[in-house]
Length: 67
Image (tube, rainbow, N blue to C red):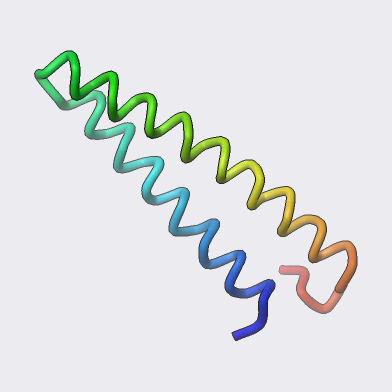
């Protein structure tokens, strides 16, 4: 697996984790748990954004990785 493929796979995993945390935050009855899930989701969103930037960088530097 290439670096670009690994980064893209990691990005896909992060998107799934973000969605799960969002669901947990919405479905939790405990206010404290909701806050923790929401805060963690925001952290994951930040990491996801960084990974998206890296994917674009990889695709720009190495056109064969596009797609």
